[in-house]
Image (tube, one colour):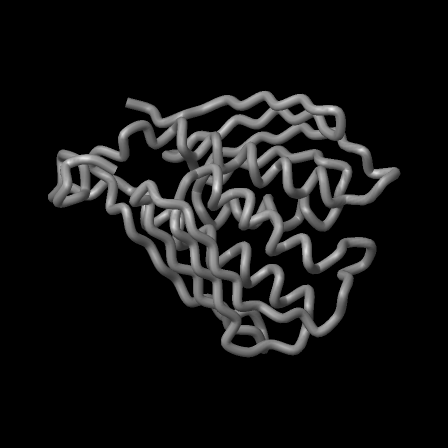
Length: 195
């Protein structure tokens, strides 16, 4: 059984087509009009071993916020669809990732209750033309739509680019762990029998 999904979302602000395969090999094809986001989402797909395709156009003449947030929404919806009832997955995942001087931990639970905690302070407000605060907006949108409980914590770091990249890579590795099939579990990974 392949765990795939395709999401199309059109609003007055963005048009997005996204496809996701959870059991992929990290093949990523992304074009969002936001160069730094393309770089981060490529890292997400590669480190999560997800096959991911994204085509997005947005009102970049306003700013990058709508495009970044809506791609987070679509990725969360795609994750939810691809996971189905979550039968047989590990459910929990966590990863602490060093990126040069930066160290970030991400922890996730696909228990069906959305929550997001983001304890990351960026030293500078931008990376090139990208607003660093949009990193948190992306992951908030993802967590609310997956839905999952996602915590991301910066232990230390001095370079905004390195911190943002550590966030995406740590989250990717945590997600990969959580959605993997657990060979010892064949039903819903909950004492309630439902997520």
